Length: 468
Image 1 (tube, helix red, strand yellow):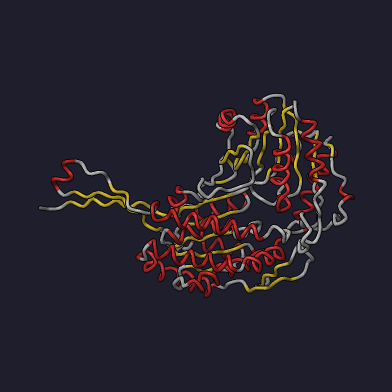
Image 2 (spheres, rainbow, N blue to C red):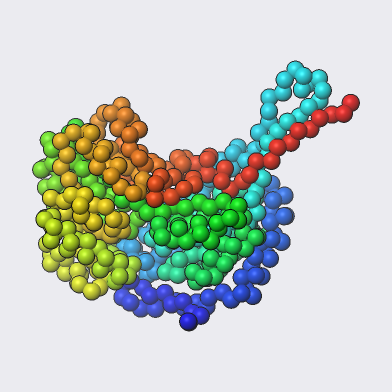
């Protein structure tokens, strides 16, 4: 087995970079450095941690153009959109940094009259766990990683980042920014690893928490590796996120946003919209406008400024989606987009035209399996109950969106949907002030928001009684 990793660009199949996998000696020295650094980092004030993390984010922001073009070469998102990931990284990081002082402050128990008389002082302190291992994916290489990296550092943990082989340069970019910002050596490190070495690292007693974003099968492997070790594991896994367009929805607004929610990043997002249920009263005009909007995409080289839809990350992923589409059509679905209208679309390549399918049902894989590509199925429903039943007919539960003018109806229906996040008139978005969670096979654990700090610390209680 080769000890090297080659990053093959989905843009043109060229080799972007080549790196050597970390050997056992490098892995052990990295763990030791994290162990050594975390004691002093724990004693560093939250304010000092914040200043260093803000500075690192400043450095990354100031290099937005360079980082954005590199993202495009690494994973194929159109360069017109890649800067948005760095802006999103900054938004999430700043928010989590800024709330850390409040969320990590000691919880002091309100003293009773007896406490005051006896000099009793009771408090709960947020203790860092130790060393946090972050396993990050390729589809949003900075946004997904920062969800765990910044809160873990702000909570006083040391961090080791293992990035997807497709985007491992992003790990190096994070490290470079933290070093330039003055973060003490060993507090943030990265490793380029294969699956076997990653599993072994998870089992190491010096790793105290694992944060993973990726596939369901990957999540199961992480849990198996950590089984019986009494260490925390956070898993953000797959999605088959549904939308329900109610009869009173703003047609133009819902079409515009759901097209973007389904096809941005070529649909390669865990919270991409993959299933749309539309009330019969507006089904026909919705489908008509939706299809016409999708036809406006420009599929092509993502390094060109006018490209709005880039390639999928690799040919295997593109072929998986092509097969889903072919199976659905063979079972009676209607494909609304003529793929030949997109000149860059070529069978056997990463370049795949967007597709909208109607006359679909839940017997088809495209409505049940995660597609993770530029395809969406649209179904007609007669009422709310039917829509909710179909939305819940999934092994996943990450996000769901409801499109209506009636907030009370959205809240009422949202309470019935088995999902981690409910949107009204929005989709495919993470608000850092809200908890990012999944149910069913979409994972476990919580990142972002004030609650995101809870899984990265443990409570330590103090009962301090004056002997006098």
